[in-house]
Length: 533
Image 1: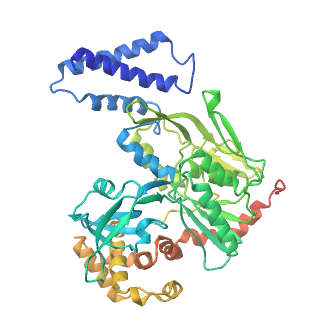
Image 2: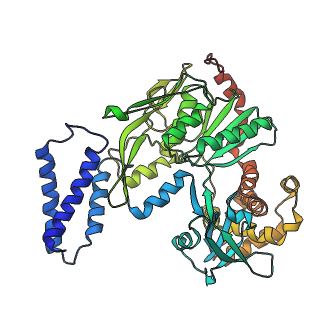
Image 3: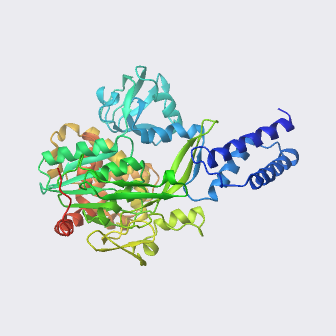
Protein backbone atom coordinates (compact mmCIF):
# COMPACT_ATOMS: atom_id res chain seq x y z
CA UNK A 1 0.00 0.00 0.00
CA UNK A 2 1.54 3.37 -0.99
CA UNK A 3 1.65 6.38 1.30
CA UNK A 4 -1.31 8.14 -0.29
CA UNK A 5 -3.55 5.10 0.03
CA UNK A 6 -2.43 4.41 3.63
CA UNK A 7 -3.28 7.96 4.65
CA UNK A 8 -6.69 7.71 3.00
CA UNK A 9 -7.25 4.39 4.82
CA UNK A 10 -6.39 5.94 8.20
CA UNK A 11 -8.62 8.92 7.50
CA UNK A 12 -11.47 6.59 6.53
CA UNK A 13 -10.98 4.45 9.67
CA UNK A 14 -10.88 7.51 11.90
CA UNK A 15 -14.00 8.90 10.27
CA UNK A 16 -15.84 5.61 10.74
CA UNK A 17 -14.93 5.53 14.43
CA UNK A 18 -15.97 9.10 15.04
CA UNK A 19 -19.23 8.66 13.17
CA UNK A 20 -19.94 5.49 15.16
CA UNK A 21 -19.31 7.35 18.39
CA UNK A 22 -21.32 10.42 17.54
CA UNK A 23 -24.13 9.20 15.33
CA UNK A 24 -24.48 5.41 15.39
CA UNK A 25 -27.21 4.62 17.93
CA UNK A 26 -27.05 8.04 19.58
CA UNK A 27 -28.16 10.40 16.82
CA UNK A 28 -27.60 14.04 17.71
CA UNK A 29 -27.85 16.65 15.00
CA UNK A 30 -26.17 19.35 17.03
CA UNK A 31 -23.30 17.25 18.40
CA UNK A 32 -20.75 18.88 16.12
CA UNK A 33 -20.89 21.38 13.30
CA UNK A 34 -19.65 19.88 10.04
CA UNK A 35 -16.93 22.55 9.77
CA UNK A 36 -15.58 21.77 13.26
CA UNK A 37 -15.56 18.02 12.62
CA UNK A 38 -13.80 18.49 9.26
CA UNK A 39 -11.17 20.77 10.81
CA UNK A 40 -10.37 18.28 13.58
CA UNK A 41 -10.09 15.37 11.14
CA UNK A 42 -7.82 17.42 8.90
CA UNK A 43 -5.61 18.21 11.91
CA UNK A 44 -5.35 14.52 12.77
CA UNK A 45 -4.65 13.65 9.13
CA UNK A 46 -1.89 16.26 8.96
CA UNK A 47 -0.10 14.91 12.03
CA UNK A 48 -0.36 11.32 10.86
CA UNK A 49 0.91 12.31 7.42
CA UNK A 50 4.09 13.81 8.90
CA UNK A 51 4.61 10.74 11.12
CA UNK A 52 4.15 8.40 8.19
CA UNK A 53 6.52 10.38 5.96
CA UNK A 54 9.34 11.53 8.25
CA UNK A 55 9.49 9.39 11.41
CA UNK A 56 12.92 7.86 11.98
CA UNK A 57 11.56 4.30 11.58
CA UNK A 58 8.68 2.88 9.59
CA UNK A 59 5.73 3.49 11.95
CA UNK A 60 3.41 0.71 13.10
CA UNK A 61 0.17 2.18 11.74
CA UNK A 62 -2.10 -0.12 13.75
CA UNK A 63 -0.31 0.77 16.96
CA UNK A 64 -0.52 4.49 16.19
CA UNK A 65 -4.24 4.39 15.42
CA UNK A 66 -4.96 2.32 18.54
CA UNK A 67 -2.97 4.83 20.57
CA UNK A 68 -4.91 7.69 19.01
CA UNK A 69 -8.23 6.03 19.86
CA UNK A 70 -7.11 5.39 23.44
CA UNK A 71 -5.92 8.98 23.66
CA UNK A 72 -9.31 10.28 22.54
CA UNK A 73 -11.13 8.15 25.08
CA UNK A 74 -8.78 9.06 27.94
CA UNK A 75 -9.85 12.67 27.50
CA UNK A 76 -13.46 11.70 28.22
CA UNK A 77 -13.48 9.67 31.45
CA UNK A 78 -11.67 6.74 33.12
CA UNK A 79 -14.13 4.08 31.91
CA UNK A 80 -14.67 4.72 28.20
CA UNK A 81 -12.42 2.22 26.45
CA UNK A 82 -11.43 0.64 23.16
CA UNK A 83 -11.37 -3.17 23.30
CA UNK A 84 -9.11 -4.81 20.70
CA UNK A 85 -10.50 -7.87 18.89
CA UNK A 86 -8.10 -10.20 20.75
CA UNK A 87 -9.47 -9.08 24.14
CA UNK A 88 -13.13 -8.83 23.23
CA UNK A 89 -13.92 -12.56 23.25
CA UNK A 90 -12.39 -13.14 26.68
CA UNK A 91 -14.17 -10.14 28.19
CA UNK A 92 -17.47 -11.13 26.58
CA UNK A 93 -17.19 -14.70 27.91
CA UNK A 94 -16.61 -13.43 31.42
CA UNK A 95 -20.01 -11.74 31.48
CA UNK A 96 -22.00 -13.95 29.10
CA UNK A 97 -21.89 -16.73 31.68
CA UNK A 98 -20.34 -19.57 29.67
CA UNK A 99 -17.57 -20.70 27.31
CA UNK A 100 -16.53 -24.00 25.74
CA UNK A 101 -13.62 -25.98 27.16
CA UNK A 102 -12.68 -28.51 29.85
CA UNK A 103 -13.87 -26.45 32.84
CA UNK A 104 -11.09 -25.74 35.33
CA UNK A 105 -9.86 -22.81 37.34
CA UNK A 106 -6.08 -22.99 37.07
CA UNK A 107 -2.82 -21.33 37.98
CA UNK A 108 0.73 -21.81 36.68
CA UNK A 109 2.48 -22.55 39.97
CA UNK A 110 6.26 -22.96 39.98
CA UNK A 111 6.00 -23.27 36.16
CA UNK A 112 3.56 -26.19 36.55
CA UNK A 113 -0.04 -25.96 35.31
CA UNK A 114 -2.09 -26.65 38.44
CA UNK A 115 -5.83 -27.11 38.88
CA UNK A 116 -7.25 -24.67 41.45
CA UNK A 117 -10.71 -26.16 41.17
CA UNK A 118 -12.75 -28.04 38.56
CA UNK A 119 -15.85 -26.04 37.70
CA UNK A 120 -18.95 -27.64 39.18
CA UNK A 121 -20.92 -29.49 36.53
CA UNK A 122 -18.10 -29.29 33.99
CA UNK A 123 -16.30 -32.11 32.15
CA UNK A 124 -13.17 -31.96 34.34
CA UNK A 125 -15.23 -32.55 37.44
CA UNK A 126 -17.01 -35.40 35.64
CA UNK A 127 -13.73 -37.26 34.96
CA UNK A 128 -12.55 -36.75 38.54
CA UNK A 129 -9.96 -33.96 38.36
CA UNK A 130 -9.21 -32.48 41.80
CA UNK A 131 -7.83 -29.23 43.15
CA UNK A 132 -4.04 -29.47 43.19
CA UNK A 133 -3.81 -31.86 40.24
CA UNK A 134 -0.84 -30.95 38.05
CA UNK A 135 -1.30 -31.08 34.27
CA UNK A 136 2.19 -32.01 33.09
CA UNK A 137 1.41 -32.88 29.46
CA UNK A 138 -1.28 -31.86 26.98
CA UNK A 139 -1.71 -34.22 24.02
CA UNK A 140 1.68 -35.73 24.83
CA UNK A 141 3.52 -32.39 24.81
CA UNK A 142 5.14 -31.03 27.97
CA UNK A 143 3.15 -28.31 29.73
CA UNK A 144 6.11 -27.22 31.88
CA UNK A 145 6.51 -23.44 31.99
CA UNK A 146 3.37 -23.00 29.89
CA UNK A 147 1.96 -19.46 29.61
CA UNK A 148 -1.62 -18.60 30.51
CA UNK A 149 -2.58 -17.69 26.94
CA UNK A 150 -1.19 -21.05 25.75
CA UNK A 151 -3.36 -22.86 28.30
CA UNK A 152 -6.43 -21.15 26.87
CA UNK A 153 -5.52 -22.16 23.31
CA UNK A 154 -4.76 -25.78 24.17
CA UNK A 155 -7.58 -26.57 26.60
CA UNK A 156 -10.47 -24.54 25.24
CA UNK A 157 -12.26 -25.73 22.13
CA UNK A 158 -15.56 -26.63 20.55
CA UNK A 159 -18.12 -28.66 22.47
CA UNK A 160 -17.71 -32.37 21.72
CA UNK A 161 -14.01 -32.27 20.88
CA UNK A 162 -11.56 -34.11 23.12
CA UNK A 163 -8.20 -33.41 24.71
CA UNK A 164 -5.94 -35.84 26.60
CA UNK A 165 -3.95 -34.53 29.56
CA UNK A 166 -1.39 -36.25 31.79
CA UNK A 167 -1.99 -35.72 35.50
CA UNK A 168 0.45 -35.78 38.40
CA UNK A 169 -1.56 -35.99 41.62
CA UNK A 170 0.24 -35.09 44.86
CA UNK A 171 0.25 -38.09 47.21
CA UNK A 172 -0.08 -40.55 44.33
CA UNK A 173 3.05 -42.21 42.97
CA UNK A 174 2.06 -42.76 39.34
CA UNK A 175 1.01 -40.27 36.71
CA UNK A 176 -2.07 -41.03 34.62
CA UNK A 177 -3.78 -39.87 31.44
CA UNK A 178 -7.31 -38.47 31.30
CA UNK A 179 -9.28 -37.79 28.10
CA UNK A 180 -11.74 -34.95 28.59
CA UNK A 181 -14.61 -34.14 26.23
CA UNK A 182 -15.03 -30.38 25.99
CA UNK A 183 -18.44 -28.89 26.72
CA UNK A 184 -20.17 -25.61 27.50
CA UNK A 185 -18.74 -24.35 30.78
CA UNK A 186 -20.79 -22.11 33.06
CA UNK A 187 -19.04 -19.11 34.61
CA UNK A 188 -20.66 -18.67 37.99
CA UNK A 189 -21.49 -15.38 39.67
CA UNK A 190 -22.43 -16.86 43.05
CA UNK A 191 -19.09 -18.02 44.39
CA UNK A 192 -20.54 -19.49 47.58
CA UNK A 193 -23.87 -19.77 49.39
CA UNK A 194 -24.31 -21.56 52.73
CA UNK A 195 -25.71 -21.29 56.22
CA UNK A 196 -23.48 -20.02 59.01
CA UNK A 197 -23.01 -22.00 62.19
CA UNK A 198 -25.75 -20.14 64.09
CA UNK A 199 -28.33 -21.90 61.93
CA UNK A 200 -30.21 -18.64 61.22
CA UNK A 201 -27.88 -16.63 58.99
CA UNK A 202 -27.50 -17.28 55.29
CA UNK A 203 -24.41 -16.10 53.44
CA UNK A 204 -24.10 -15.38 49.72
CA UNK A 205 -20.85 -14.27 48.10
CA UNK A 206 -21.48 -12.70 44.68
CA UNK A 207 -18.38 -12.29 42.52
CA UNK A 208 -19.77 -10.53 39.40
CA UNK A 209 -22.94 -9.44 37.61
CA UNK A 210 -23.12 -11.56 34.46
CA UNK A 211 -25.96 -12.83 32.28
CA UNK A 212 -26.93 -15.61 34.70
CA UNK A 213 -26.48 -13.70 37.99
CA UNK A 214 -30.17 -13.13 38.79
CA UNK A 215 -30.98 -16.79 38.22
CA UNK A 216 -28.04 -17.91 40.37
CA UNK A 217 -29.00 -15.57 43.24
CA UNK A 218 -32.59 -16.83 43.02
CA UNK A 219 -31.41 -20.42 43.34
CA UNK A 220 -29.13 -19.55 46.25
CA UNK A 221 -31.90 -17.71 48.12
CA UNK A 222 -34.34 -20.57 47.62
CA UNK A 223 -31.74 -23.07 48.84
CA UNK A 224 -30.95 -21.05 51.98
CA UNK A 225 -34.60 -20.35 52.74
CA UNK A 226 -35.20 -24.09 52.48
CA UNK A 227 -32.45 -24.59 55.08
CA UNK A 228 -34.16 -22.24 57.54
CA UNK A 229 -32.52 -18.87 56.77
CA UNK A 230 -33.95 -16.06 58.91
CA UNK A 231 -31.42 -13.35 57.99
CA UNK A 232 -28.94 -12.75 55.18
CA UNK A 233 -25.38 -11.51 54.70
CA UNK A 234 -24.98 -10.48 51.06
CA UNK A 235 -21.26 -10.17 50.29
CA UNK A 236 -20.39 -7.83 47.41
CA UNK A 237 -16.79 -7.20 48.44
CA UNK A 238 -14.46 -7.09 45.46
CA UNK A 239 -17.39 -7.33 43.02
CA UNK A 240 -16.42 -4.94 40.22
CA UNK A 241 -19.87 -4.98 38.61
CA UNK A 242 -21.28 -6.00 35.27
CA UNK A 243 -24.68 -5.76 33.64
CA UNK A 244 -27.15 -3.06 34.75
CA UNK A 245 -30.19 -5.26 34.11
CA UNK A 246 -28.75 -7.94 36.42
CA UNK A 247 -28.08 -5.39 39.17
CA UNK A 248 -31.71 -4.28 38.94
CA UNK A 249 -32.97 -7.89 38.89
CA UNK A 250 -30.93 -8.79 41.99
CA UNK A 251 -32.03 -5.72 43.97
CA UNK A 252 -35.62 -6.43 42.88
CA UNK A 253 -35.53 -9.72 44.81
CA UNK A 254 -35.21 -7.88 48.12
CA UNK A 255 -37.55 -4.91 47.54
CA UNK A 256 -41.36 -5.07 47.12
CA UNK A 257 -42.89 -3.65 43.97
CA UNK A 258 -43.24 0.04 43.16
CA UNK A 259 -39.95 1.50 44.45
CA UNK A 260 -37.31 3.22 42.35
CA UNK A 261 -34.13 1.11 42.48
CA UNK A 262 -31.84 3.13 40.20
CA UNK A 263 -32.04 5.68 37.43
CA UNK A 264 -29.70 6.90 34.72
CA UNK A 265 -29.32 10.31 33.13
CA UNK A 266 -27.43 11.13 29.94
CA UNK A 267 -27.20 13.82 27.27
CA UNK A 268 -29.60 11.95 25.00
CA UNK A 269 -33.15 11.06 25.99
CA UNK A 270 -32.92 7.42 24.91
CA UNK A 271 -30.22 6.61 27.50
CA UNK A 272 -32.06 8.16 30.48
CA UNK A 273 -34.09 5.49 32.27
CA UNK A 274 -35.78 4.75 35.60
CA UNK A 275 -35.98 1.23 37.05
CA UNK A 276 -38.79 0.40 39.51
CA UNK A 277 -39.07 -2.75 41.60
CA UNK A 278 -41.64 -5.42 40.83
CA UNK A 279 -43.32 -8.19 42.81
CA UNK A 280 -42.24 -10.93 40.40
CA UNK A 281 -39.54 -12.58 42.53
CA UNK A 282 -39.61 -10.67 45.81
CA UNK A 283 -38.43 -12.73 48.76
CA UNK A 284 -39.53 -12.36 52.41
CA UNK A 285 -38.38 -9.15 54.09
CA UNK A 286 -35.86 -10.80 56.40
CA UNK A 287 -33.14 -8.55 57.86
CA UNK A 288 -30.04 -8.28 55.68
CA UNK A 289 -26.57 -6.76 55.78
CA UNK A 290 -24.68 -5.97 52.58
CA UNK A 291 -20.87 -6.13 52.72
CA UNK A 292 -18.91 -3.78 50.43
CA UNK A 293 -15.33 -2.59 50.16
CA UNK A 294 -13.17 -0.39 47.93
CA UNK A 295 -13.36 -3.00 45.17
CA UNK A 296 -17.17 -2.98 45.04
CA UNK A 297 -18.11 -1.02 41.93
CA UNK A 298 -20.82 -0.25 39.39
CA UNK A 299 -23.58 -2.88 39.65
CA UNK A 300 -22.50 -3.63 43.24
CA UNK A 301 -23.05 0.02 44.08
CA UNK A 302 -26.48 0.00 42.44
CA UNK A 303 -27.59 -2.89 44.67
CA UNK A 304 -26.01 -1.62 47.90
CA UNK A 305 -27.20 1.95 47.19
CA UNK A 306 -30.80 0.78 46.67
CA UNK A 307 -30.76 -1.37 49.82
CA UNK A 308 -29.45 1.61 51.80
CA UNK A 309 -31.64 4.35 50.29
CA UNK A 310 -34.82 2.31 50.64
CA UNK A 311 -33.96 1.26 54.23
CA UNK A 312 -34.17 -2.40 53.23
CA UNK A 313 -31.04 -3.32 55.17
CA UNK A 314 -27.67 -2.11 56.45
CA UNK A 315 -24.48 -1.61 54.45
CA UNK A 316 -21.23 -2.52 56.19
CA UNK A 317 -17.55 -2.22 55.28
CA UNK A 318 -15.55 0.43 53.44
CA UNK A 319 -16.63 3.10 50.98
CA UNK A 320 -17.17 1.53 47.57
CA UNK A 321 -15.15 2.34 44.45
CA UNK A 322 -17.41 5.00 42.98
CA UNK A 323 -18.02 3.88 39.38
CA UNK A 324 -21.29 5.42 38.29
CA UNK A 325 -20.77 5.79 34.55
CA UNK A 326 -22.84 3.70 32.13
CA UNK A 327 -21.06 2.32 29.07
CA UNK A 328 -22.70 1.33 25.79
CA UNK A 329 -20.75 -1.26 23.81
CA UNK A 330 -20.54 -0.41 20.09
CA UNK A 331 -19.11 -3.02 17.68
CA UNK A 332 -16.38 -1.79 15.34
CA UNK A 333 -15.47 -3.00 11.87
CA UNK A 334 -12.06 -4.25 13.01
CA UNK A 335 -13.74 -6.85 15.24
CA UNK A 336 -13.13 -4.88 18.41
CA UNK A 337 -15.58 -2.75 20.34
CA UNK A 338 -15.95 0.72 21.79
CA UNK A 339 -17.29 1.00 25.31
CA UNK A 340 -18.49 4.58 25.46
CA UNK A 341 -19.95 6.33 28.50
CA UNK A 342 -23.46 7.48 27.65
CA UNK A 343 -25.06 8.19 31.04
CA UNK A 344 -24.59 8.22 34.83
CA UNK A 345 -26.06 6.07 37.61
CA UNK A 346 -28.03 7.61 40.49
CA UNK A 347 -29.36 5.91 43.63
CA UNK A 348 -33.04 6.28 44.64
CA UNK A 349 -32.25 9.27 46.88
CA UNK A 350 -30.52 11.06 44.00
CA UNK A 351 -26.89 10.33 44.87
CA UNK A 352 -24.48 10.22 41.93
CA UNK A 353 -22.43 7.06 42.38
CA UNK A 354 -19.47 8.27 40.27
CA UNK A 355 -16.44 9.70 42.07
CA UNK A 356 -14.98 12.96 40.74
CA UNK A 357 -12.23 12.32 38.17
CA UNK A 358 -11.82 15.53 36.19
CA UNK A 359 -8.61 16.70 37.89
CA UNK A 360 -6.89 13.32 38.27
CA UNK A 361 -4.71 11.13 36.12
CA UNK A 362 -5.73 7.50 35.68
CA UNK A 363 -3.23 6.11 38.21
CA UNK A 364 -4.38 8.48 40.95
CA UNK A 365 -8.02 7.81 40.10
CA UNK A 366 -7.65 4.09 40.76
CA UNK A 367 -5.17 4.21 43.64
CA UNK A 368 -7.17 6.80 45.59
CA UNK A 369 -10.19 4.49 45.70
CA UNK A 370 -8.18 2.05 47.85
CA UNK A 371 -6.71 4.67 50.19
CA UNK A 372 -8.24 4.02 53.60
CA UNK A 373 -6.90 7.16 55.25
CA UNK A 374 -8.02 9.57 52.54
CA UNK A 375 -11.25 8.00 51.44
CA UNK A 376 -12.95 5.49 53.68
CA UNK A 377 -13.20 7.57 56.86
CA UNK A 378 -14.18 10.88 55.27
CA UNK A 379 -17.68 10.93 53.81
CA UNK A 380 -18.53 14.15 52.03
CA UNK A 381 -20.78 15.72 54.66
CA UNK A 382 -21.53 18.61 52.31
CA UNK A 383 -23.56 16.20 50.15
CA UNK A 384 -26.33 14.86 52.34
CA UNK A 385 -29.35 12.92 51.09
CA UNK A 386 -32.32 11.30 52.81
CA UNK A 387 -33.38 7.68 52.63
CA UNK A 388 -37.03 6.71 52.23
CA UNK A 389 -37.42 6.76 56.03
CA UNK A 390 -35.48 10.01 56.46
CA UNK A 391 -32.06 8.69 57.46
CA UNK A 392 -29.07 10.74 56.29
CA UNK A 393 -26.73 9.21 53.72
CA UNK A 394 -23.77 10.82 52.01
CA UNK A 395 -22.90 11.55 48.39
CA UNK A 396 -19.60 12.54 46.86
CA UNK A 397 -18.99 9.30 45.02
CA UNK A 398 -19.32 5.66 45.98
CA UNK A 399 -21.56 4.21 48.67
CA UNK A 400 -20.58 5.18 52.21
CA UNK A 401 -21.57 2.29 54.52
CA UNK A 402 -23.97 2.73 57.44
CA UNK A 403 -21.27 1.11 59.56
CA UNK A 404 -17.67 1.68 58.52
CA UNK A 405 -14.97 -0.86 59.35
CA UNK A 406 -11.31 -0.49 58.48
CA UNK A 407 -10.20 -3.24 56.12
CA UNK A 408 -8.22 -6.07 57.66
CA UNK A 409 -4.47 -5.65 57.26
CA UNK A 410 -1.86 -8.36 56.92
CA UNK A 411 1.91 -7.99 56.79
CA UNK A 412 3.77 -7.77 53.50
CA UNK A 413 5.23 -11.21 54.22
CA UNK A 414 1.79 -12.82 54.46
CA UNK A 415 0.58 -10.90 51.43
CA UNK A 416 3.54 -12.32 49.50
CA UNK A 417 2.60 -15.84 50.59
CA UNK A 418 -0.85 -15.28 49.11
CA UNK A 419 0.52 -13.77 45.89
CA UNK A 420 2.92 -16.69 45.40
CA UNK A 421 0.11 -19.20 46.07
CA UNK A 422 2.01 -20.71 49.01
CA UNK A 423 -1.20 -21.52 50.92
CA UNK A 424 -2.70 -23.16 47.85
CA UNK A 425 0.41 -25.31 47.36
CA UNK A 426 0.30 -26.33 51.03
CA UNK A 427 -3.37 -27.31 50.73
CA UNK A 428 -2.68 -29.29 47.58
CA UNK A 429 0.30 -31.15 49.06
CA UNK A 430 -1.12 -31.82 52.53
CA UNK A 431 -4.59 -32.64 51.27
CA UNK A 432 -3.21 -35.02 48.66
CA UNK A 433 -1.08 -36.87 51.18
CA UNK A 434 -3.82 -37.11 53.85
CA UNK A 435 -6.96 -37.52 51.74
CA UNK A 436 -8.12 -40.64 53.60
CA UNK A 437 -7.78 -38.88 56.97
CA UNK A 438 -10.59 -36.40 56.26
CA UNK A 439 -13.71 -38.00 54.83
CA UNK A 440 -16.36 -35.96 56.66
CA UNK A 441 -16.38 -32.18 56.21
CA UNK A 442 -18.16 -31.39 59.48
CA UNK A 443 -15.58 -33.40 61.39
CA UNK A 444 -12.80 -31.66 59.44
CA UNK A 445 -14.26 -28.23 60.20
CA UNK A 446 -14.48 -29.08 63.88
CA UNK A 447 -11.24 -31.01 64.45
CA UNK A 448 -8.60 -29.86 61.95
CA UNK A 449 -5.95 -27.75 63.72
CA UNK A 450 -2.70 -26.55 62.19
CA UNK A 451 0.17 -28.20 64.08
CA UNK A 452 3.97 -27.96 64.04
CA UNK A 453 4.31 -30.54 61.24
CA UNK A 454 2.08 -28.48 59.00
CA UNK A 455 3.96 -25.29 59.80
CA UNK A 456 7.22 -27.02 58.93
CA UNK A 457 5.69 -28.17 55.65
CA UNK A 458 4.62 -24.58 54.95
CA UNK A 459 8.15 -23.35 55.70
CA UNK A 460 9.57 -25.85 53.20
CA UNK A 461 7.29 -24.44 50.52
CA UNK A 462 8.29 -20.88 51.47
CA UNK A 463 11.97 -21.80 51.18
CA UNK A 464 11.40 -23.49 47.82
CA UNK A 465 9.76 -20.27 46.61
CA UNK A 466 12.86 -18.36 47.80
CA UNK A 467 10.83 -16.18 50.15
CA UNK A 468 12.62 -14.98 53.26
CA UNK A 469 10.78 -16.27 56.32
CA UNK A 470 9.81 -13.60 58.86
CA UNK A 471 9.14 -14.98 62.34
CA UNK A 472 7.81 -11.60 63.48
CA UNK A 473 5.30 -11.39 60.61
CA UNK A 474 4.35 -15.04 61.07
CA UNK A 475 3.53 -14.51 64.74
CA UNK A 476 1.57 -11.35 63.97
CA UNK A 477 -0.53 -13.05 61.28
CA UNK A 478 -0.59 -16.57 62.76
CA UNK A 479 -4.39 -16.78 63.01
CA UNK A 480 -4.81 -15.60 59.42
CA UNK A 481 -2.06 -17.92 58.12
CA UNK A 482 -3.43 -20.99 59.90
CA UNK A 483 -6.97 -20.29 58.68
CA UNK A 484 -5.75 -19.96 55.08
CA UNK A 485 -3.88 -23.26 55.42
CA UNK A 486 -7.00 -25.01 56.70
CA UNK A 487 -9.23 -23.41 54.05
CA UNK A 488 -6.92 -24.48 51.21
CA UNK A 489 -6.89 -28.06 52.48
CA UNK A 490 -10.71 -27.92 52.45
CA UNK A 491 -10.64 -26.64 48.87
CA UNK A 492 -8.42 -29.53 47.84
CA UNK A 493 -10.48 -32.19 49.60
CA UNK A 494 -13.88 -30.84 48.54
CA UNK A 495 -14.31 -27.65 46.45
CA UNK A 496 -14.07 -23.86 46.45
CA UNK A 497 -17.34 -23.37 48.35
CA UNK A 498 -15.92 -25.42 51.23
CA UNK A 499 -12.89 -23.10 51.14
CA UNK A 500 -15.22 -20.17 51.86
CA UNK A 501 -17.07 -22.07 54.60
CA UNK A 502 -13.76 -22.36 56.47
CA UNK A 503 -12.37 -18.96 55.52
CA UNK A 504 -15.47 -17.09 56.69
CA UNK A 505 -14.90 -18.21 60.28
CA UNK A 506 -12.06 -15.74 60.70
CA UNK A 507 -13.78 -12.88 58.87
CA UNK A 508 -14.32 -10.02 61.34
CA UNK A 509 -16.67 -8.19 58.97
CA UNK A 510 -18.97 -11.21 58.74
CA UNK A 511 -18.94 -11.51 62.52
CA UNK A 512 -19.78 -7.81 62.82
CA UNK A 513 -22.56 -8.20 60.24
CA UNK A 514 -24.24 -10.82 62.43
CA UNK A 515 -24.12 -8.42 65.39
CA UNK A 516 -25.91 -5.76 63.30
CA UNK A 517 -28.92 -7.88 62.35
CA UNK A 518 -31.12 -6.37 65.04
CA UNK A 519 -30.34 -2.90 63.65
CA UNK A 520 -31.06 -4.17 60.13
CA UNK A 521 -34.45 -5.42 61.33
CA UNK A 522 -35.19 -2.07 62.99
CA UNK A 523 -34.28 -0.07 59.87
CA UNK A 524 -36.36 -2.36 57.66
CA UNK A 525 -39.38 -1.54 59.82
CA UNK A 526 -38.95 2.25 59.73
CA UNK A 527 -41.69 2.58 57.11
CA UNK A 528 -44.61 0.54 55.85
CA UNK A 529 -43.68 -1.36 52.70
CA UNK A 530 -45.99 -1.75 49.74
CA UNK A 531 -48.04 -4.91 50.07
CA UNK A 532 -46.31 -7.99 48.66
CA UNK A 533 -48.25 -10.49 46.63
